Length: 264
Ligand code: KIV
Image (cartoon, rainbow, N blue to C red):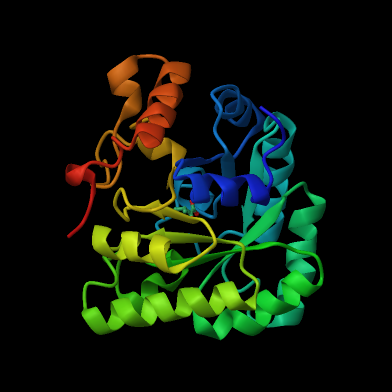
């Protein structure tokens, strides 16, 4: 596989080929994922929950993400690497550029920010400085205390229309990729159809241009809780490489997510 670049992801969208993505936090797993042909790896601020054991992502710092980005980059081979910008690291365009530069220096190809229309100026500022941006709409875990929990977003038709508008505004500002989280399948499909940039879903149904999962979820590592939108691929295959290959195959063939992992 040649080096994955944003242009390849756009071509995949245009050709109707699904994009495969997964979170990664260290070099050993990123090598395993790269060996199985995963297109995109995200150093998610989910690391606050799955690595540190916190209840939310709010305790994660830019230094944490930079540290794990360096490690992931070392194993990621030709995969496209996205680093999450943590809580309050992009509250102004200037702060965003300063902190995003740290993550790009650590080896990221792109940074991801959670939020809608209020971020258009920041997205434009980052892209003007040469920092590619992935936007993130739907459930925004950094806003958990405002939302009042990890809830499905966009069920109300007005909120759904507003989310699509915000996606278009972020795309116009320069965002080159969009993650949509925990929204009804019909809205996930609408996002893919309305936007030219690739749309990667998590809990957003089968109609998005690609899928991402938190690696600990797809390996079923929390025995007490498997989120509805994931599948325990390790239990199905009994080997780490087999689990990742099964995930990649299921995303590419459109068999994951099925109706049982999707929201109405
Ligand atoms: O932090 C993270 O892992 C994420 C994914 C859930 C998309 O943002």
